[in-house]
Image 1 (cartoon, rainbow, N blue to C red):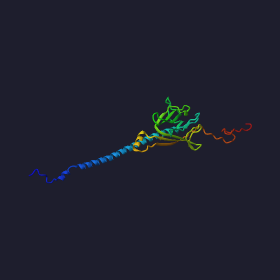
Image 2: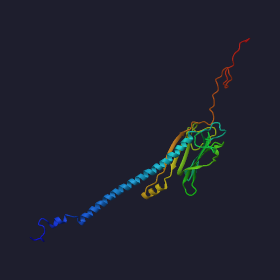
Image 3: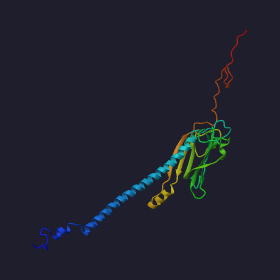
Image 4: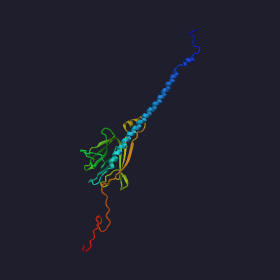
Amino acid sequence: MNLGSPNPGSSPSRARSAGFTLIEMMVAVALMALVLAMVGGIFLSVINTREKVQQSLDADKGGYGLLATLRRDLTGVYAYALGGPAFLGENDEEGGQASDRLHFVTTADVAESADGVKPRLVEVGYRLEKEREGERLILYRRASGYEGDPLKGGGSYTGLYVGVHSLDIQYYDDESKEWVEEWKEAKRLPIAVKVVLELSPREVERIAAQAEGREVSISRYEMIVGIPAQAEPEEEEPDAPGDGAAGSGAPPPTATGAGG
């Protein structure tokens, strides 16, 4: 028996099929790399989309939050019998963009005095100012107990939001039936206030837009708030002429017979 003779049932081609050739391994590696590239692209796309949605939500949260604060303050506007004007809307610009200011008195529960007692009337003010180092606009707000002159614009202001693009406030005049850009009427209040707030994109969003070669957008928010208060009491119509004094509202004198 010849032990050195090859197995009669084996052949060179069958021996080669027991493993992978170099070409097969290269094709497998290329396919795996292609699949990983596709999965990685989808993964990065999901991450970028999530970041954009989160940035949009953050901007909306800031914009709607600012409008909610303004609405709360404006719905409590009070100007009756305060001894002078208590509502002032000033039209202004900063860098070619609307930068309006607003001062008024409100009954909204938005401030506390030094002794912890909440004042019944609160002076509120809004204004835009540039940050000390940079070009961004900051929205400031003040809220302090009423001290007799809400239009002087004094008091301590607190920054609400950094990166405001513009703040445009208009007032609906019931006499002219038009929206006006400012309000300086001492004896009347507007019946509604329209606020248009624009927020600049954040720095991260700006850089991402530049990297993708697209234009960065400015977020815009708008609301209209009705003003139910009055600055002065409504004029009463004179009484109809009769036995009483005209316009006095006094009842007519009681008739007495002769001899009591």
